[in-house]
Image 1 (cartoon, rainbow, N blue to C red):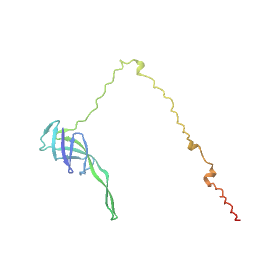
Image 2: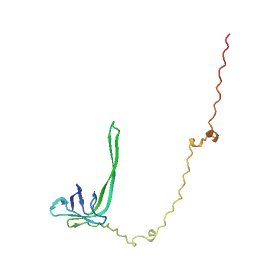
Image 3: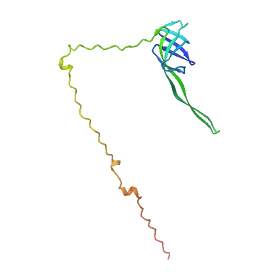
Length: 171
């Protein structure tokens, strides 16, 4: 069975066992809450009467939502305002819609095969041995292997003095 409830100005489609985050409600984790504003209820394709129908829920946590950045700007007026906001939320677990309670889903257990069908050699197999993992050796690249002498790094190399051309003699 499902229901559409309104809380905090928003509408939520819920079923027994669902977990939803709604606008902040009063209460602490573990408290029970009743949502009275049921807009629609149904079971499969059938629509049920919602008169007097309520949805029971349990508060799981009181949390803050994702941060929203508010940025205001007026160009050419040197006006910039940056602000952040995190909305308060209440996490609810829907426990019942009307009289229907959430059915706990039990995982079907796999039946163990009888030991008589398997031969004794197959039931106790020795674990396979793994080869030791090889360590990767660092690859030497041409750029890394070519190093300059330590002296070259400390002092810059001096350039030879430029030779000036000889002055021409006039006759």
